Length: 231
Figure 1 (cartoon, rainbow, N blue to C red):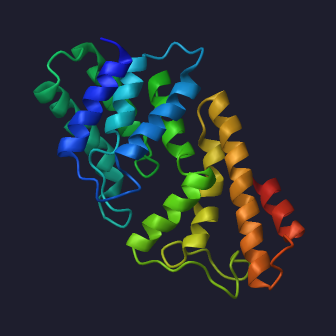
Figure 2: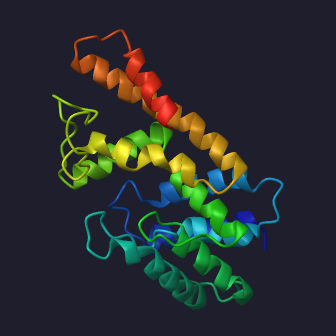
């Protein structure tokens, strides 16, 4: 069966059975992760069907970021994916199960599971790239809004004179996690794409800091340079 057919079947299943309430982790998110994974896969020996499957089911179990068992969600998602494949996709190659399960379990930042296969590395990179750039910017504020977190500390937005606290301030999350993602990329293409997207986030950070100082049309070049070097 062609990949496009599998993708249509997976989408049809998810649109029928998977809750779309979390717009940061909906079927559209799965589709974007797959499109990015296709770019990362080019010229590799990756099993395309394994990558496709992991991309579409990696968040089938998705616990809130402040849930005490958040770090277990990807392992639970891997187990649930195998159950779904067995129950609803009987013609799916059973030989792919271990690779799919590992790629899903290893995609999560909080799980801390090292990707051991090319498929897992591609899925991890593709999902993390979704956290960067313009889409990542929209998603981080969407998720933080769901959790009731504030936007930023107006007096010290970059935490130059206070500890970073991304539980209280969404903007702090850029430094505690987002700007570190480039260093976690497993593929060469992923590293290039992450560097480009992080540059966009750094520009946004600089613009926000400039506006807080009343400089609406001028970026804070010192801050911009500081974080580009950091990344």
